[in-house]
Length: 94
Image (cartoon, rainbow, N blue to C red; front, side, top):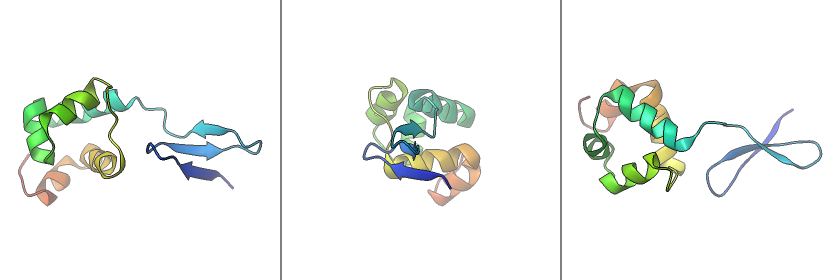
């Protein structure tokens, strides 16, 4: 049975039998945000407006200065898997 733990910074880690922690997701957060936004075909400003965050937040995510955490990370994963449904739920069109 795999034991996992959600860290305070939003990372998911697996707990090894010796107690060490191994990251479950090996995805670069900055690259992931850029990839999601690019697949949507939106500028940083348009993407920020769609997900209702300041443009500075999207810029900081994409430059690796900050990482999306908690609800923002969950929203990005939903947009990654189903952008039309995510944007429809947010009340906008893609």
